[in-house]
Image (cartoon, rainbow, N blue to C red):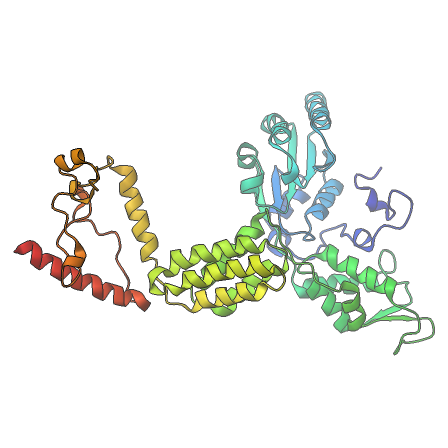
Length: 452
């Protein structure tokens, strides 16, 4: 009986399995990529081949070999092997398997290896059900996830597992997988009367974005859609797949992006840091990655508005106006037309002079507001609309700035215990250079008036 039904080369309804399933590697010799983890002599491969594997979490993008590794482990181990899908399994099934694993370990000393595909889809209660058996040594857990396990796997379970990070495959590695599929007469397309141009294979490999499964699916679809006797065919009845045919089949590239997952935070971080580093090219690229993948444009607009104040501030006060205008433009005309408004704002922010002085000023003031006892407002800054308030010296000694020739007085506007605090320290960049000149000048005026 197959632990994974597609291993038989047929689907559950008896039809041939998809090409990606038929070409799935069965041994380490067929495995492509992840050589930093699986080359001969590497610890993970050694543990698998010697059947000494401990609980692990395989974290990586789709199509990088997580499930394939589980299948190789299933074929290698002498332990009982059980496969779960987080989409289909419930807490009842989990508990039954855990009870059987405990019984088998006590009766025979034989371990159970439990493979959980998409472990990030299991809720806390489901993940907790594995923990006692992992701690007791009854099971070895293998979790596969496309999401950051730091956020998606229970801390207790994660602390008892080793995380291995699988990277996306290179274009060359994917192209090699496609070439092997074209020549494989047992599981691949080697018996098909079809030719695939080299540039077509390269196009598929680039489109796949490191995902072998996606590449093989596209190859299979392109071959199926190719008509017989196309121009340049090598013979009668032979189909040909060229770059144009591939482009027609794939139409539009599906970008790797999850609006609720780690890639969402990675790309918005890349956008923010590219703008901060005054790199307009990187900024518009990361922006396009988000927009084209379907990110909420108002989320992007909110981040641009935040950036305008946090990283530019008064070095270019117009930056906030531009960011808010982009938000209004997106709201007014919608998408996709609003994409250029977002791009205009991102490029403006990237090329504006930078200062985090406003951001730092607020943080310092907020720290004092939280740390110190709430200081009362000085009497001279209070309004006195009633007779009683005037009798209590509300507003006494207030100095009206417009009555002074320079519109500056020596009056302190902070609580007495904070009178010498400096929260806002403008940088020597952009418009803040002018602000600094003004503040320095006003400080001199205030000092002279206090010394009188």
